[in-house]
Length: 260
Image (tube, rainbow, N blue to C red):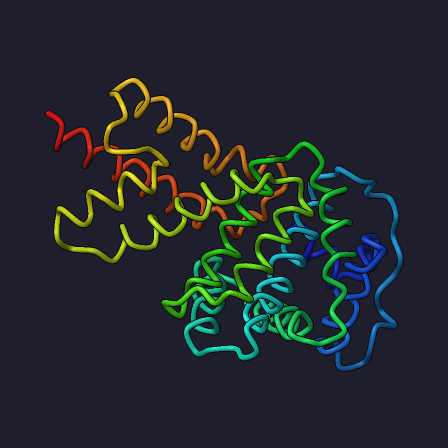
C-alpha cells in the first residue's frame, strides 16, 4: 500500500486534513506508541491524487462501517465478522489491520462526524461514481451481515446515499443488487439462485436478452478491478472487486444457461 508506506515513513501525515484527517489521526494515535511526533504534515498530494483518494477511501470505508454497525444500537458479531472478512480479503498486514480496527472503532463513537466525513469523501471522490458505488456496496453488505435490515440501518444508509448525490430510486436498485449478490453466494438450489442472479444483475426475469446483456456489461464495467484502482480504490481491495466481477459473470452465465 503506497500511502501506507508514506504514513509509516512520516512523509504522508495528515495531508487529508479536515474531519477525515482527524479520524485518521485518532486511529494512528492508537497505533503509534510514541504518539504522532514522527508524522509530518504533507500537502503535496492535492485533491484527486490517486494515493490521496486511496487513503481517504480506506479511512472513510472502515470508519463508516463502524458507524453503520452501531446505527441500530448494537454491533453484532456478524457485523464484526464481515469487517474482519474485508480485512482478510485485503490481506492487510498486522499494522494495517490495527489501523482498520481503530478506524472502525472511531466510527462507533457518538461523536463521529458522519456528515462532515461524507462531505469530504464526496469532494475527494468527485466524478468517481463507480468508486462511490463500491463504497455504498460495502456499507450495505455491513448492514445485511447479521441477516436482518434494521430500520435505523436503512435510514442511515439512505441518508449516506443522499449525501453522496444518489437518488432514492438509485439507492433502492443498488440495495436490491447487493441483497441479490449476498443471496447468490449462499444459495445452493437453482430456482432460488436464479432469482438471486436476476436481482444481482438488476433486471427482471422478463428482461430481454439485449436488456440482460446491457446490464451485465454495465456492471462489469463498474466493477472492473483495474479501473477502480485507477480511480482510487486501495490496491488491497482489488480482490473484493475481482470477486464481485466474478459473481456478476457467474450470475449472467446462469441466466443464459437457463434461457438456452
